[in-house]
Image (cartoon, rainbow, N blue to C red):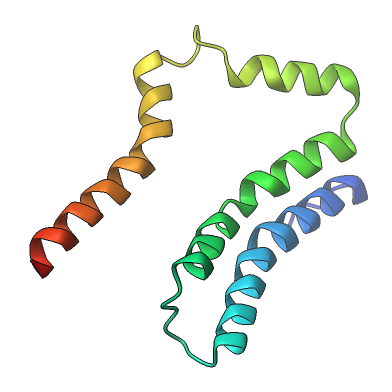
Length: 113
């Protein structure tokens, strides 16, 4: 098994603690306070959806906490590099979750009407 330096291990630990711990802990707290496994409050449901963005928050935390200014600039340049990533795929990545949610809402509306 390959051994990684302590700095990389620390980044990995932080990423997994934030990205997995945040949504689970928020969901469990909401379930405990509402005394139910079924969350029928739309505000609480939206909070859970927002907590699912925790991998993004974890990645941004690691980038801004562990890396210097030049690596941060390099990272931001690589994110929006349309020479490497076709515009179609960039839009697909951004719009696919919205399309899934929209299609689920439409199917739910058709099914329950």
